[in-house]
Image 1: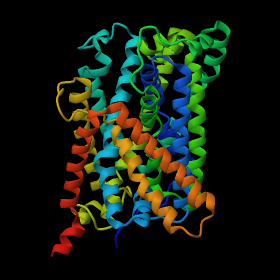
Image 2: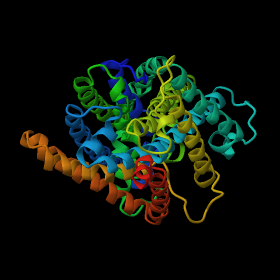
Image 3: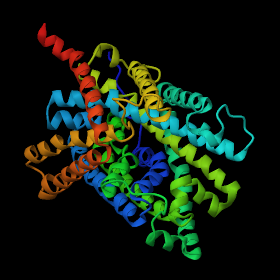
Image 4: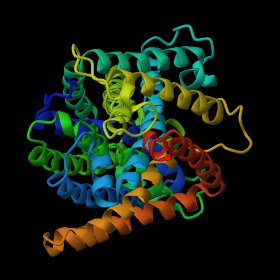
Length: 465
């Protein structure tokens, strides 16, 4: 008898997955990026966060309606298959397994390592580093690379051997990561109002930074990474207790928490340092100014733990991608990838595939974005472009929802899906205006990987036979 995934996660764990996966590294380092792109224009940055949040919320609520009707093994694949068709569902699953999940998982492993080293070197300035901190040792030194691989393998091991432990870890890190965000939101706001830094940041821009072309579009595009990850919670559709009720609740409650936390945190950071310092040194300088060197550095540890929680959630979804394809008897060797280990109730072969692809994306990220050894064609930002792609892939799902679901009311059937479609297309436009030629190189890579998926599709081979 074939082993199936058990329903082992409750509503609270699902909410923690939504909030915990999304609230992580993005809010910490993309806040700096948004300031850079807007030239230190704080009000424009806040508008970008609001627009990005509304786009996420409109998509999230629309998918929550789909979650009440369609349920199998992986939410986004289920919805794509039910709305558009089996072939589109397969390509959505293949994209998730080979590009979307692994590229973000690899990036989060690096960010977890980076902030861990920031904490260690701040606590012990004499900590030996092969590449000095001033020369970027915390970003691309061998210590950072080794720690990245340790975190990547650790996240895989925990999810592969003990899915229940991975769920508890997700819940714990979600609570922990809200500590630095909450402290900065409240204390930073009060601190900034008392010393006048907050008011100054709102009316002046950074003197030494020029905004990029189309700064609002570029800033909204940057929020895509910070707001992304909620769809990963649908990967545990088959393992969530009473998923048709709990998944929509988790998506909506988690989404509202995310938007509130992001905006209040961004304003709080603005009260801790000048726009120029935030652009040059990142949010760490605001923590140190407000809480002092000791407590400020402890908060760096909380940031590292926050990134680990996001990494765990991404790996949780990543490990199940090939299984969701194989369960439909599609993709390469479905009889292998749909096997579920009886002892751990985990699709082990699917998880191994995920780890290998994650490692491949990390190699690409290191050479093209960190070390910048590859400076020619096929260099793009893997933290934003795959996310923008999935927004584009949402559009036919929304369109077919409006066409097929005649039993839904006007709000559910038309208004929210139309808003979600507009928001998704806005994200795509923002990405094109921001990344320009890099989009072309990414599209070529995307097309090649999708062609490989088509070639290895088991159902296509059966038809030929």
